[in-house]
Amino acid sequence: MDEAERGLRIAELNEELSEAKKLTAIGLAARIRELGFSCLRCGECCRGEDNSVLVFPREVRCICAATGLAWLEVAGPPEEGEWGRDGSFHTLEWRLKKDMEFCRFYQESSCSIYRDRPLLCRTYPFYLDRGVLMHSECRGLGERIDPGEAEKIAKVLISRQITEIEEAISLLERYRDFDRGDPAESGGKDDITVHDSEGEHRIIGGEMQGL
Image (spheres, rainbow, N blue to C red):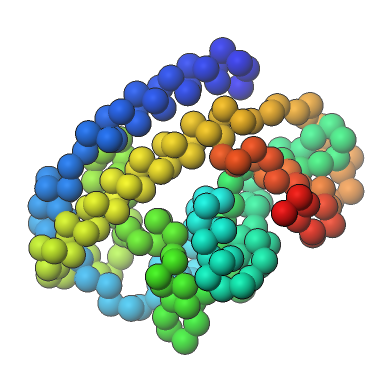
């Protein structure tokens, strides 16, 4: 993405942000009540190979403070990315750490960081696509939901939408491009740069730099 494309995308995101800030919980809550939802504590959203929870830097720091864990014990870089000419690996944002197929914080059939869980977890199975309520597959859909709980979820959904857009804008504003290289010439992912809303975080030999 060149500078012109980046500027255009940032402008588009700022328009989306303005629209997101106009959202109200009333209509969203009514739609949530129509769909119905109750967490059945089945844990299916916390485990499985496809489970991947996007977590923003501020959320990582919050979980670190609550648990005493180091950054890389809480979150790690996704597998998807691009190789730099110098053999480094570049990727975007963070994902909650997993223990085999389970989220590492799913313990004894419950969430050990429930009070500090990421926005994605707080709103599951719901999410907003340009202000439109969407949902993922979940056993709890269709269950009766209390109006107050529906409104609570609606408010967090709006907060999540605003946060996601703000994070995307900050990422683009701080992003520094790099010369691409051939992954066949790399020596493995011993030098990783994660681009996020704070700029760049570098992991060398499995150790976080600059924290």
